[in-house]
Amino acid sequence: MAASPSALRRAGNEEFRRGQYGPAAALYTRALALLEAAGEAAAEERSVLLANRAACHLKDGACSLCVADCSGALDLVPFGIKPLLRRAAAYEALERYQLAYVDYKTALQVDCSIQAAHDGVNRMTKALLEKDGVNWRQKLPPIPTVPVSAQTRWSIPSAGAPEANTPATASQGEPDQTAAGTERARTLKEEGNELVKKGNHKKAVEKYSESLKLKQECATYTNRALCYLNLKQYKEAVQDCTEALRLDPTNVKALYRRAQALKELKDYKSSIADIKSLLKTEPKNTAALRLLQELNRA
View 1: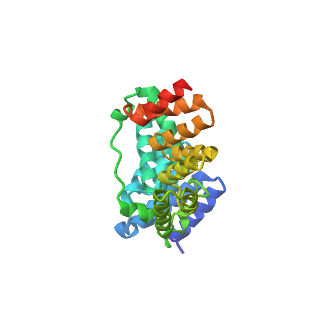
View 2 (view 1 turned 180 degrees about the vertical axis):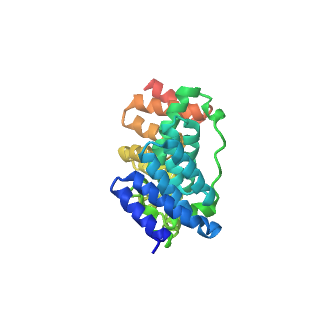
View 3 (view 1 turned 135 degrees about the horizontal axis):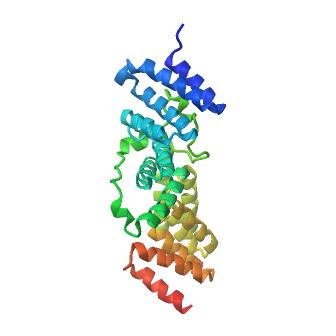
């Protein structure tokens, strides 16, 4: 009896786990051939198989084949995290840094907590700055806007896709990204914001902390940092701003608040460096210019 596509896929996953990338790719190819006839009806399954085969190509260093399979997977199911990350890694290996940057940024729109994508954006920013100079952003191809439907879709594990975890290259240990968790995180953040308005920074910290357990978000970190500044907990403020900058390396609030905290900790050199980074993004930011004057006098 001929093997079914799902049996072939499972066998491919097993070979992949054992490091047998060639045989795994061959099994995924056989499964794809069986599904070709099903056409649209099997779009999601075909997308997963292409993304899995792309992972084999990436492991074997066949980056152009990886790009082709990821593009095929994304044509079938747009904004899939794994094909985006794998294609970005392949583009990076091929030194096509602009295209890698676009894919990493797109992945972050789908799920902002993916560390691999943040690291990729930082590497590509550095590489493009060296290659194209300060105006590198103007030479980028357009970054697609991810619809909200795709964001929620990918944050809810699909019951029909247990293979979503294999072959594994996505980051581990991420906060709960389910729709309910994301909604709860937003509510807690808003409750924290209300407490800040009332001047209750200690209670606000508790709300933001609960929110961050459910969803790591730049604004929640910078909001909690503001509370820590008011509570004179400067080291904690620095930590939160650093986390925010990991998620968004040019975030103005994070740079400004970290500079404030570093000034209080008498680390004037690092504080000045943060203000100078901020002024590259917003050269006329009056609060930052004022803080820089104070630092230069310190």
